Image 1 (cartoon, one colour):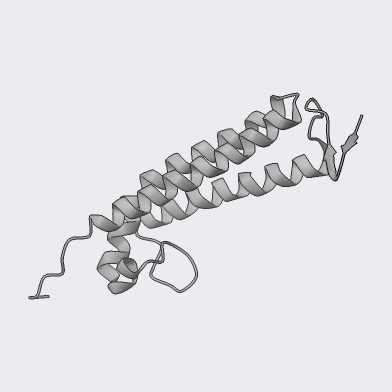
Image 2 (cartoon, rainbow, N blue to C red):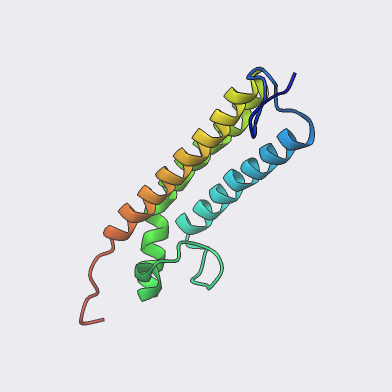
Length: 135
């Protein structure tokens, strides 16, 4: 049952997300997690060459090819952890019967994913050794 209070539409807390909306969010977040793992693998193995489209694009990674590869290798474990968090937050709502709980898990997992990913990129960027003037 839906009630209206003034201009605010109130939905029952127990209304479960389902159908196309749930499928779309699950697919989008799952694909994001999978692509992040793929990028982490490519970066860790040196297969992700400097480019203008994919990868960690910061002033430090664009400063030199050496820095690009270093940051991607250093950030790879963080990217994998962030992806695992997002994947768990993508699957868990499928087993919850409450729409508010489902939305909270989706949003919480997405926020934690971004937090871990950003922390890893910042930390990896700070580990770039200074350029050797003799190179």
